[in-house]
Image 1: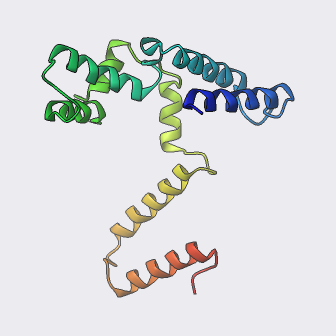
Image 2: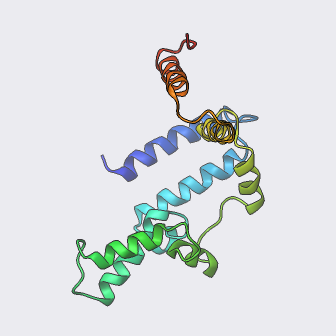
Length: 171
């Protein structure tokens, strides 16, 4: 079974649930999400890479690498130059290749900047992002105290780790 067939199967199952109203009041904009998913799967099935590149990061990066290989036929998948493109594409710095695509208007933005800013500061409480944010905040507060990485800290960290693994409270 191909990835497209698998995605299509999942999509059909989700559409059946949506028709039953399962997502109503639970998943905001469920209809839009399902329509976008269906459109993406259809374009992938047709191998319409240019149509999905603005929406799918891996396709956009693949196209950048393949374009370099077309312009320089001596390059192959092991070429260091392609690794540079890979790193430039993924760079979070202002000079990253993805940011250049975004600045040119090539990327399809599905979420507004305002929503991104909001959830950067206020992650939903039922997500791993919230847990990471709380742990980062706790670490930042702890670094402002003078406890350092002494034995008490290591012991507390071990207890917390054991508590998470055993789903019990630290003793």
